[in-house]
Length: 263
Image 1: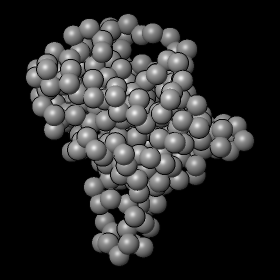
Image 2: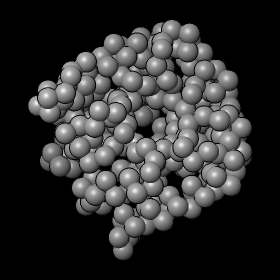
Image 3: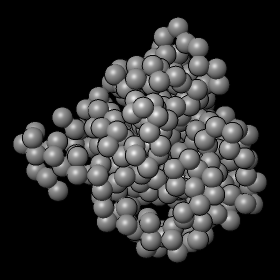
């Protein structure tokens, strides 16, 4: 059954080209309203990104990315009482976002970009390290991701980041085939050996579409919620989702079946 501490992270992409909700929240009022809606639906935190990480997405300048996310973070930090995460790989954006009110850094490149280790260490905030592989050829996908995490955790500690601030994301869909993704999901609990929190993000991704006969993003909600449930059962501490209400409902049902108090 779902772990009592599995948190729901609502996705807020302030981009024109994200694969699922690109262009919907570029206007600040719409972004703020969407964040508040997700919180009302049960989101425990909001993850804000200003640059798409989908394959072949255009790179965004620092100024452009900052103009998208910083005003929203500043406004939301005064309006909401849940943590705000900044989804970026740029050290400058990390710094600006923390100053604006973000309390977590979510980096798909695991702090490998210039100065990102040092900036993150200076903030003292939580950081999520994601695994990304450009060439999806593995002998054992779990072992190789764990080896990557060993290296990045060592780099973080060496830079002055407290180990208890680190969150690990195996990077579903980032340089993995469908079979790799399914193997990671089945064996997710093996990452608990690090003694750190585990974050997963499968919501509306192509792996869901592939399992549903190439269904487009609008038709992947049920599949996404199902993978969030499985991830929770297999040890995920945080699930990053677009469909907050539906995921929250599913978790409530799981808690009821387990005989736990539903809230």
